[in-house]
Amino acid sequence: MTAGAAVPLAALDLRPAPGAAPPGRMLLAQTATEIRLTLRRGESVLLTLIIPLALLFFFDGVGALPADAGRPIDFLVPGLLALAIMSTAFTGQAIATGFERSYGVLKLLGASPLPRWVLLAGKTLAVLAVEVLQVLLLLIAGGLLGWHPHGSFGWVVLLLVLGTVAFSGLGLLMAGTLRAEATLAAANGVYLVLLMLGGIVFPLSNLPGWAEAIAKVLPTAALAGGLRSVLRDGSGVPAADLGILAAWAVVSLTLAARTFRWE
Amino acid sequence: MAEVLAVEIEGLVKTYRRRSAPPVTAVGGLSFQVPTGSVTALLGPNGAGKTTTVEICEGFRRADSGVVRVLGLDPARCGTALHPRVGVMLQAGGVYPGARAGEMLRLVAAHHRDPLDPDALLGRLGLVDAARTVYRRLSGGQRQRLALAIAVIGRPDLVFLDEPTAGLDVQARRATWELIEELRTSGVTVLLTTHAMDEAERLSDQVVIVDHGRVVAAGSPAELTHGGAEGQLRFRAPGGLDVDRLLLALPDGTVAREMPLGHYLIAGEVDPQLLAAVTAWCASNGVMAQDLRVEQRSLEDVFVELTGSELRP
Ligand SMILES: Nc1ncnc2c1ncn2[C@@H]1O[C@H](COP(=O)(O)OP(=O)(O)O)[C@@H](O)[C@H]1O
Ligand SMILES: [Mg+2]
Picture 1 (cartoon, chains in turn orange, red):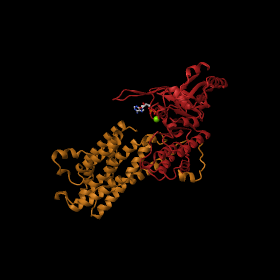
Picture 2 (picture 1 turned 30 degrees about the vertical axis):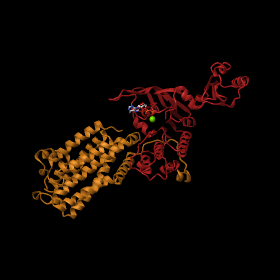
Picture 3 (picture 1 turned 180 degrees about the vertical axis):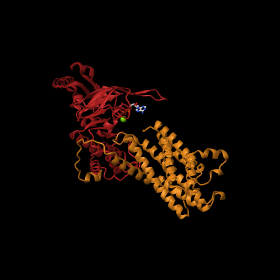
Picture 4 (picture 1 turned 90 degrees about the vertical axis):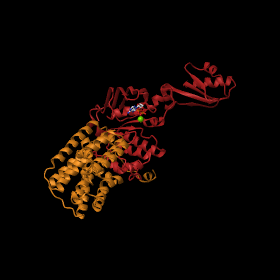
């Protein structure tokens, strides 16, 4: 209170002048705030920016991959791109949204002139912005380690976007139904499991047969596998992987929309 | 604003049904009105149904039955029309845990067409020092004031303030009261909830006393406390006077009791005749009455009388 009392009070014109801002202005403010909040969270920076880079350098350095998998860097970069997408769109988003729900943020914003679609679009744009940063860092790091991409840029972008949608749906499904603390634990747990079962730092073929069969249809393996088939093998349409991601996207978003509780 | 009544509530009922526990009727047939431009206080103990009522007006919850009109509209269906015009202060929370106070206020300002200057508002509420602190680390009182700032930043026609001063220190409470008074002079309608009698008495044009989900009394603070020239008389005297014999000397309808020992309270139509009758009775019984004084009933007295309960804050 002390400084507040010392500052001369500016006149406030409290007379009613209600009205909503133009949606574009709201979207800009929401997106900028969401990006700032993400980059301010230490654990989220660790999760989204540092871990994928650290894994890239570590696994490229130790040469733990089987010889038949080709050059390690060609295997690792697509996998870690998938991990980066998962950490931002799923883990980070689930945890942040879970806490926002428990702090009543979504409830209060629901009573402001902000339309729901602008709130969600702001979150999505912020996720995409952070992902652009992650992808750039990984591409630069890959380049330093002698990596060269192949294949079509268009398929890569489509895979990344579809992966983002699928993981966002899963993250929002979790955040909208579980308590914040449960979301925190579950989102980290799922991240760890999918990191190991996702064909990210070692091939799925290293897993026992039954685990490989399950892992193949999980979104992480589909994203990593699709990216790898384009970027390493230069193959055309990664149809099966796109199909798996699209199925996850539809199911998770439908369920999230049905079950999401705003408070 | 064309409406004469900013809020109209008629026969509102809300029952919470939970799987594992018996249903709770939080609001059981509540009716009251908030005239445009007034400050109305919903006064009641914890669990009276204040938050439930306000949250139905804000569109967060659905009424089971009854009619609710906010600025002439149904809050359950007209959110898009109402949100720009209605400011909301939740009883707790509502801010990104990692957002700085000033950042959050600027964000909400960006949702409105013609908002107040966030810095001026922070200054007014004594939040300049806290502007760069993240919400998670704000004190309870700072969070309260930030929530109030968020409710008014969009220059609304009507604000709902759920316990705006709960847990505030004296200075912060005064800053909040001054802002609410200024909202009123600026033509903003205010519906606030409180369990503080003095707050309701000081701020509001109308007090609606609720308990167990019902209105037990409503009116201006003056109407409620002066209810027909009622008042009370207190004095000290030796303990153990025969209060029943004293009452025989007083007009019908007067009540008298000794509590604690040696302290006497007489409630009823306090007029010069009553005063004279009491002093005459004392004189004829050789009793020396000390500290004799006439008191107005406070809102607290009214509340205790109506609800039969002490305040349960
Ligand atoms: N979401 C809820 N689920 C079940 N019971 C609730 C819920 N919210 C409030 N209640 C119950 O309803 C009653 C009224 O609560 P509330 O409206 O919060 O009162 P107040 O704001 O006056 O303290 C209380 O008995 C409370 O326990
Ligand atoms: Mg309450």
